[in-house]
Length: 198
Image 1: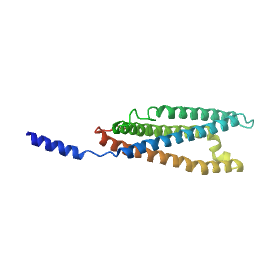
Image 2: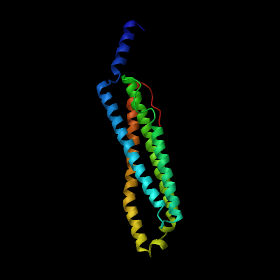
Image 3: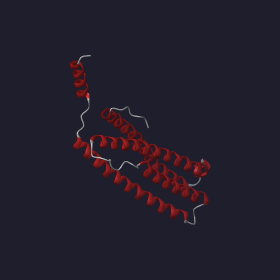
Image 4: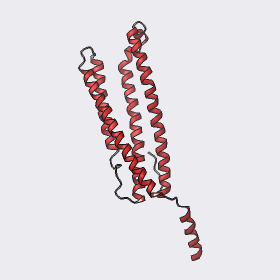
């Protein structure tokens, strides 16, 4: 191969490289850190409220031992999820340098952490649903709620409120995982490496 042909191939290869808008990338990284901070604050507040509510329910004299056990299990799940969310976010707060490569690798780490967080959220939700159904199984039997208007009303309210919340949570997490996978594909183009699936 001649030197001129080698230069031509190098030039074509160079022109096919994606262009990174460094200022835009810095802005995105900074904005994502603010969103992450807001999400951690929201998670901390909702976890604290859930723990306070659960402690109140545990001390409620009319609550049966079965439901007190549920409250303790729910508290443990909230604490485990909260700890996991901090653990999964490690190394995603700041880039070691301000270079485009470092910012892109930070964005990549954030996308991978986001996928893992969404999966943990889905698994935690599934675990909670199984736990609730097993615990509430006697009340879910038609013989229990057909003749008890108060229980029937409570079940309808719980399903009407929690059903859409559960469906929205599942839909959001699945959408978020797809979004982060697309982001990983774009990052892999910039970094010139194949993305590994999470």
